[in-house]
Length: 331
Image (cartoon, rainbow, N blue to C red; front, side, top):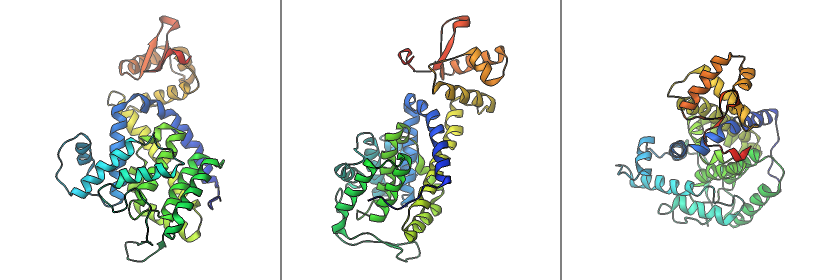
């Protein structure tokens, strides 16, 4: 049974822009192991901070690197568990209940009584004011509801960007676990998104969600009252788009010799866009794209080569440029 939601213009417009930006950033993540680790740490810290874990990015970094950290043992265990759970992200089957339970076990081992198992009692979701805005479904219904949700996610032709958000929301509604439901909803959205584009195994969407935490809980409540996840889909796609936009300016431009040169960033973005559909780019092609002189284009290309972002091949007029690390066999 299809969960209730509608495709709106806001959703469709965000999907187009997310697809465009994700494609231009994917190669950066594939090549940069340090960047991937750095952003996974941000992702974990933010997802746990939403659940009131007080450890900082610096403390999480130290824990991941095997250093000793002074802090609440429970919060330290949450970080260690989350890192282990996210390390498995590309190995989970996003449509298998057994993998969903495996991820919960990794995420909550040593922290909750029913780690890796669905809850056996009724549970209420309380707001900060002590009111009870939502009751999780009856425990005896959880296994069948989760199977039905994953069956829909696997077989329905709704775009995966949207399906991932619907699954996130429905996990919060079903509330299948005693504890860890919010973390599992966010993790499983990342699992599904990473099947659409591996970039999302590393992209710290949770960082932007954490900055907009009141809005996150507001749209969850609105969707719950309406019994319709449209407003939550719109919000989460806004968060994904904002993350991509933030990373595009902060993440990549910082890699260009540590300088946030607007002109150089614009040139590099044009090159990235061109190389999504071409094996390489030449000086003359970049001149046509930018309207710059041969000497100016040559200087930009030489800078990007020296900074390890591009590789040059050939001599003189036959010289072409590829993204660093891309193989010639892709021609």
